[in-house]
Image (cartoon, rainbow, N blue to C red; front, side, top):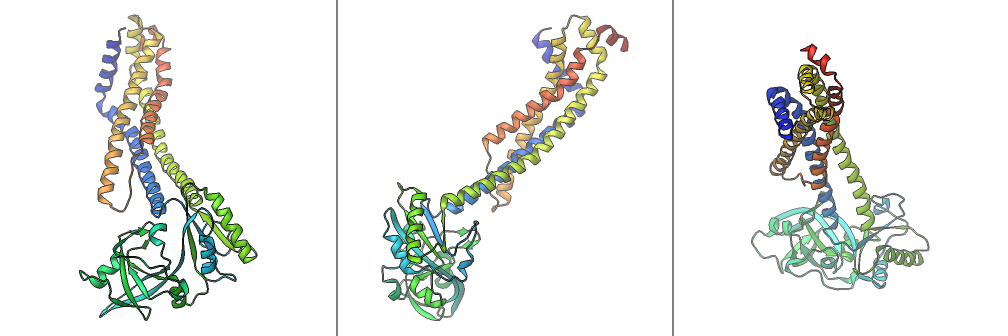
Length: 399
């Protein structure tokens, strides 16, 4: 039997049962579409979260008061026996390989200008925020390098707060009231967007020493450390840990490197992606069972045809190839249709739901198509082998 004859017989058998072939391929298509769509959403969420954590740069570590054993916010943010102080931040800044340090105090207060009032985030920080947090002034400048405990009453507005309070009026030199105290605006920041639900644009920056007094705190909530690009994060963390132990007498603080945060997030999100891919795999398994069932029925219906082919000289291998070819074509067509549905659905979701990140992963897409082809072959093996084993005389008698 020539190859062209095998192709004609295979395509003819599929075309003769159009509805059945369509429904069989549909099972595979749904599974492939589910794999592509779910992994696209999972990959998009993973990239989104990682971008959120790296938008402030990639050579950072954070020191928080209180010793914690698990990842998360330190309970000492609310209260601690030994707080992190401005002196701690200045001592860390003097360490080798440390480029800049930002002590942080965060609170919420009303910001007033003339008859307009807006309650917003207040960040008490140091002058190195533009370098450490990778956010630059859009107008004016950032906080000057005053002595933290005696800093002048200057304020820098986030882009959204500036728009809400001043509209098109320039805020530079204007005096605003923050938490009942008067500050002079020296700059406004570029738009930074949201960070895990916090709108960084709807905020105001004031000197950290004044924020400590405003919120009646003894110590800062966090110290963000920017280290040199050629430094190793663990080595910098070890030096910071050794310094603070000497100053505090014990390890009553927590150091978290950005690598640690990304590693934990990456492992969690990888599991999430695999989980959603497994859901699509279940659909693929169902589609494979459908091909197995249809091919078994096809063999039973075509026993006479198999007997005739064998009587005309077709070999066992050719008969088996005929039925395997049908299963392979059904799996491949279903896989291609599934890819089209999955990729189209991902693009549709990205346009309809702007806040839901979607990213097509080429590796998962090719893997899904390979799975469709493999499932088609595996599902056709048993029926094809059964057809090849049929006795030609007995098969003709059934006709």
